[in-house]
Image (cartoon, rainbow, N blue to C red; front, side, top):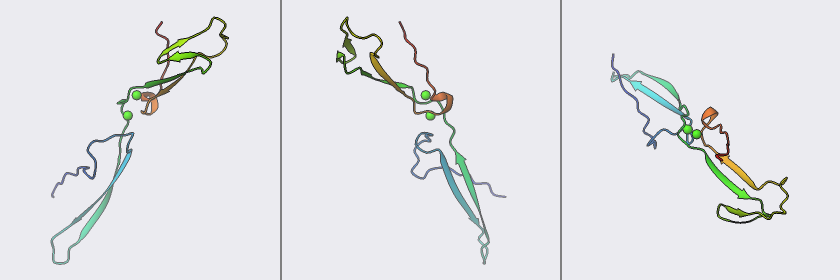
Length: 106
Ligand SMILES: [Ca+2]
Ligand SMILES: [Ca+2]
């Protein structure tokens, strides 16, 4: 019996679920006999997601508001039933790692 170790090294510098979730390796072995005999096998590798991306917030003020950067200037007459800001949250992870909850800190 001979034991070999198999590494993923084909253009892979690190495993990243968000870039590539699945690898398939094909391995072949053959003996050194006069009429070589061989066997092959397929190895399926699924990369499991980890929580390696923080959520990020992008916001856009209501176009009715005068604003600069993260600061808006709201007239007293502004209809408070209209949204002040549209917030979009991104998280590249999957499942609970990518599920987010938005809360106000004040
Ligand atoms: Ca995440
Ligand atoms: Ca991830």
